[in-house]
Length: 130
Image (cartoon, rainbow, N blue to C red; front, side, top):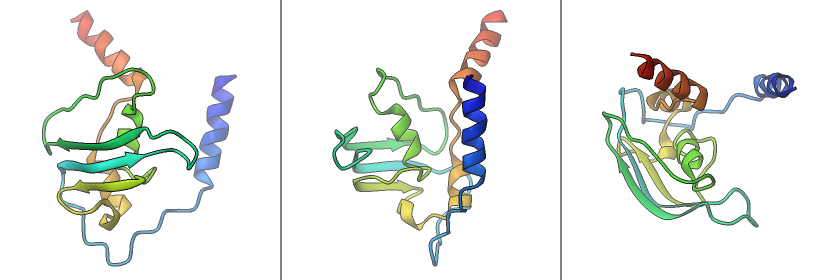
């Protein structure tokens, strides 16, 4: 049952129009990027509560950064914003010092890697078996 829903959603995504690159895009293409959130606020809709409330955060270009928190705390939103799946209600997000809006999506999205829960479970199981 769940597999059918996933297949339908993948079909919808495949039919979506490509996202245009901003005119005159100059950012991107330089490998790993540091990431800075400046007073970032976000809500999923005008009548929805704020998920992020003016947060400031700096993530270094190299290494591993983990976000841990209760369900609904905004962890997935933190991953969706830099990849421009959603835009902040206010504030700025700056990968490599450039405003997020100036980045070409083809250069932007490969910069961050985040494991899915299933991949993380497989990894942890493999490590436990060693």
